Image 1 (cartoon, rainbow, N blue to C red):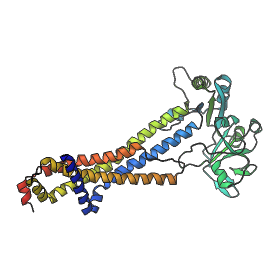
Image 2 (tube, rainbow, N blue to C red; image 1 turned 45 degrees about the vertical axis):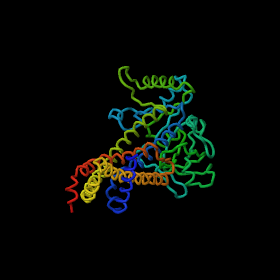
Image 3 (cartoon, helix red, strand yellow; image 1 turned 60 degrees about the horizontal axis):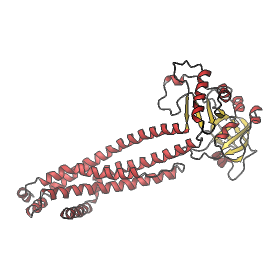
Image 4 (tube, one colour; image 1 turned 120 degrees about the vertical axis):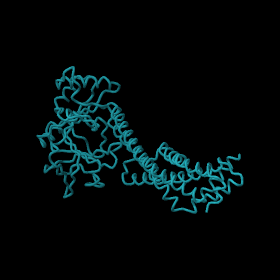
Length: 411
């Protein structure tokens, strides 16, 4: 009971001291505020990014396999990967013919990136369009049409100049209108819009749905030099593992990979891509926590410095308290409490600032569902309190060791 009373009195004294020196207290814990707000803000952004990417990848469908010539998560691409020959339409046909567990396989052809791809409608230009040529099986992976239809096998075989566009292009060029039948210009070629795709369930944070998809052979006709393919493979329900094995075996044969050599392509399911992304976000979170700890370290040094100054300023007060019976423990509790209250308030202020950062990011990037995770809030406040305890020990110990006679004579 006595210790609780001492702690309560210590909190009261600490708050009174902070009120007397508001600016000094704020500057002292500025590093703690920055460090804590960084933990909260980055934690919320990472949590939102993680959720958004997870939902986006899941929108491919649980039975979808993505095949590329290089690693899809482009952090560890080796020079050998860049030298690999592209995947081809023939690879897609071979998979469709020889893999009984595969329901659909669609080639996805990218344009030649050496040029600038531009789309125009009535003088309104778009330069960051996401062009691709594919087949009707692409839509089976979960594409939902907002207007019109996806192109058919007939459109593809006849190489018709038609296109389906993303929702954000429709909103930019045809607000509140059905654009089906309108003619747009893509790289100087007229294309008739036959459909509008709804934005995927979860788009990349801050990105727009600027897709313009053409029938595969129309794309090859427009871009004869294009070679880079992605293969979108849809397995029958319950046969995803078998489909992966079959696709791997067929592609190794098609690409003449020796038994002793690794795959010359990369394939992944939605769940595997999510796991890989989780590993990346975990590393990013760790790096940001380390960087924010620098701010906490600076804040902790500031707290120690100001507490040492406080001990010097209140030497006579400490002498009086010891003279009337205060123990060393009481003095230690008083100064440790003051340090913890100081950094704790800084942590709460930093948490509020981090929450505001989270709201600001959500306003700027509406597609990023930021949210302050419980672990970030608890960690931010706990670390700030820990900083006060750690860096307050020395000043508190120095205060407790003062000789009461010498302290009373101090001017």
